[in-house]
Image 1 (cartoon, rainbow, N blue to C red):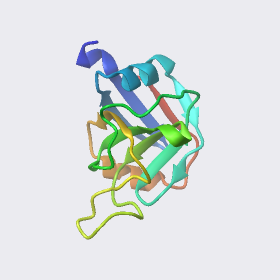
Image 2 (image 1 turned 90 degrees about the vertical axis):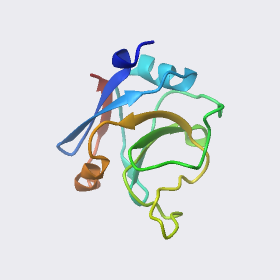
Image 3 (image 1 turned 120 degrees about the vertical axis):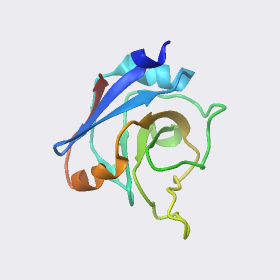
Amino acid sequence: MADDLMRIKIQVGGVELEARLLDNETARAVYDLLPVEGYNNVWGDEFYFEIPLYMPPDDSATTEVVVGDIGYWPPGKAIAIFFGPTPLSKADGRPVPAGPVNLIGRISGDAAALRKARDFNPITLEKA
């Protein structure tokens, strides 16, 4: 699928960001499910929320993420959006997920804008 066909919008608490999903099986499955809305859980500077999809860990599964990455966390059937340090982060401040995530995309703009939305629900992902 062409990159421009895998653009999404993330909306929560008045903050709207665009992102591009990667061309992998998990990202395509998430994209096909859109739009989704979930209860926004906060873990440091990470939002995560359950979606009605189970995908096993894939070749992209990693705990090495950077600000702006979007992952799918198989144990929680959850989307994870990283916009700063998490409780497992080290001195460098890079986000560290609770466990390996399948990388599915990347925020196009300033992911740190999500800090303004940490007390809001729901969170929505939809096709752009």
